[in-house]
Image (cartoon, rainbow, N blue to C red; front, side, top):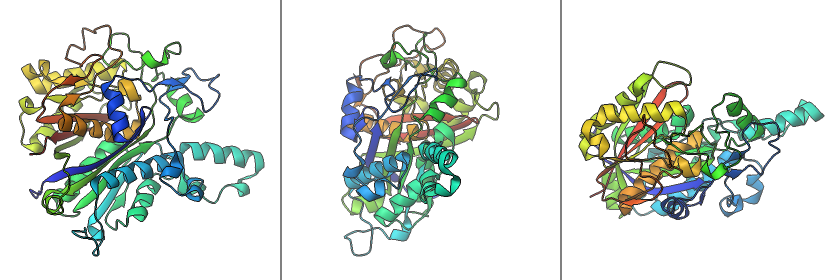
Amino acid sequence: MSNRRVVITGTGIITALGTGTEKNWQAMLAGKSGIGPITRFDTGKIGTRFAGEVKDFQPEEFIDKREVRRMDLFSQYALAAAEMAVKESGLPIGPDVPHGYIPEKVGVIVGSGIGGISSLEEQHRKGMEKGFDRLSPFFIIQMIINMAPGLISIRHGCKGPNWSPVSACATSAHAIGEAWKSIRLGECDAVIAGGAEAAITPLGMGGFSVMKALSSRNDDPAGASRPFDKDRDGFVMGEGAGIVVLEELEHAKKRGANILAELVGYGANSDAHHVTAPAPEGEGAARCMRLALDSAGMNPEEVGYINAHGTSTPFNDANETKAIKTIFGEHAKKVAVSSTKSMTGHMLGAAGGAEAVACVQSLLRGVVPPTINYTTPDPECDLDYVPNQAREIRLEAAMSNSFGFGGTNVVLLFRRFK
């Protein structure tokens, strides 16, 4: 593999905590919860009646009003987060732009775990009531997942690879890792990468609820997402997007880009164990962390912070803890581990992108966000989870873990740029 270095120059994030990196970051540092009762539909027949809905998003701030009606919400989130990331980056594309990237060498890799489920529900209902010849002509392009990177590439004139990974809750971490690989290999010089999700719908909530995957703490939504806490009882659905702009270092320096962090490692593998349960002892997750460290040529002791997958489910949190201890050994007790899902909920295919943004901000600002709602220690989860309050730490490197149904694992490794 080429030794081209890859840096992050822009971030865009939309979560239940708000729209934009600064708004999210300040809310995370304050330990705010974005979780509350669902307002979009009647949850009377669904076991879980709360989620991390995005409340402040105004699509018309990013997308023409006529176009908004033609897009599923997940694509709106993706397009808006990409717009924010490109704006922060100042990414120049085109031969007529100073230091502009060749459009054919700028890619877009943005995925989703579920895609346009609200459009699917709406159009199915319409078809059943009025006939399937009355469907919207935009239905298919609302539903399909690769419409998100397609719309982003059209908006910004990116003529390089344009595709969507789909790997459940590891989706956007895969997107960022594959973008890193494509720049390292010289296939691309810059890539817009991440993921988006909008699955807080009757079908989305109902499906996860009957699996018994969701918390049922209906009397305390804000306290329901409690990763690593002894009383955790399932994850909380979130939504939104997390997008980053990655660039080849020398070109980024030449154009005077403001470099936020460097992406130095990427691991991807499979548990090959079970469709939903993690491998015993976190064996697959441990191997994946080792792959990321090896690809970066780093020792575990160099990592000061892990943004954990930390879903607030009994199995994940205990197994992830074991995996960290397997790889980090004695250093496991010293590394800060937190789950921002305690505040945003679990954004499924968008989670890895949002959490990559959190890692970049931690490196940039020397502070790590907390795991909120951590009140009762679990003997099986005995690491430093940065309970309830943010902590100032001068970091050299941060790791982000993302694991998904189907046994898919991704680990990203970021380093403070210097």
